Length: 445
Image 1 (cartoon, one colour):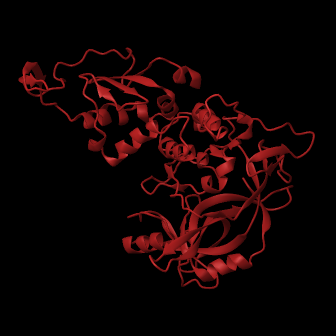
Image 2 (image 1 turned 90 degrees about the vertical axis):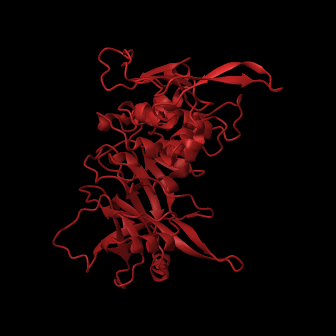
Image 3 (image 1 turned 45 degrees about the horizontal axis):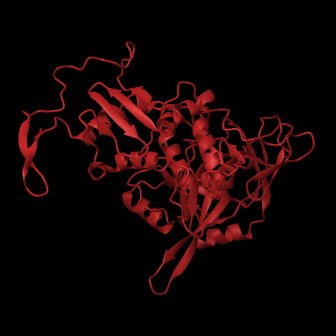
């Protein structure tokens, strides 16, 4: 399906709410691009000689506002499938109730009167929207940054059948991103081996340490729909708006991915495939077929080796001052003004806030007092560093962790866990507790 959009001369799209009679609608007489009479002005050439005239008028609505209201905020852009259709299309003609808009891969959108949207007049959200499309090209050396930005947009869009389409609606886009990842030198004539790239539940195996760190967006409403077929560690498991943290230079992975199962089974005691070279797979035995690139794959069980340590979750960081302090101390970037972060503490020092946790899947027990804390597991994913000083530079470690709970297995052996949320730990004493913890095998579903 992706090829229909990618190789079409034009993609036609209608943004009206009522499309029962097609995309062509008679324009209402009271909707015109101007709110003033035409004004004729003299046109002079380079030597200041009169060379004709041109006409100007005052627009009814600034072009940026019209593009937002008629296209970006239209009912069409709320559909989950539209994202890949928009990104894959080289040229689009938008049929809106106010008139035509033209958009292509290389230029900013133009309106029916040939006026062109000015990037410096766009608000930050629209700039990000336009930059997303502009950054989707074969020579982009940061294509994974594009991918996560696209997922952040996609995660907030509507799907009629999320159980079926949560990953399917990205499959065409994933295939093209996979081609770019499989061709690191970006050679146009290069032979691309797409089978080198492993794509599971909307994330790339080569970047899994970062992909696991998604967080429910601070502006999102509490999720109400869970995609049961998707693994808990993937954003695809919840129908909610998500975001990824800023990448930090020098971040070190702390979790080793040993194997993976790509089929849902009653038990996952042993992996179907072993991982080598960071993101390549080989069958665990002769009975297992070689893994093929599958952009529609929704399920995967991760066989990990890492440090799992018990921490305590306490009350919410409900003041702007507390949130700012937590963000600054953990190298978070822009501090949220409001969110559902909770205080994370060591079991031995419950009075010290050691970090924060965003626990979108943690079940709350109203009978449990936050002052005593709730014990959960924290899985160490990676370590970033908070840097200080200008002349005498120092750096303090900050742990990226997943909060998980153990899943009871009837016949299975070993330890199986599901994700509860994500967070960061900065307290030195709690970090030393992690250092003293022995690594163990963990299966994440």
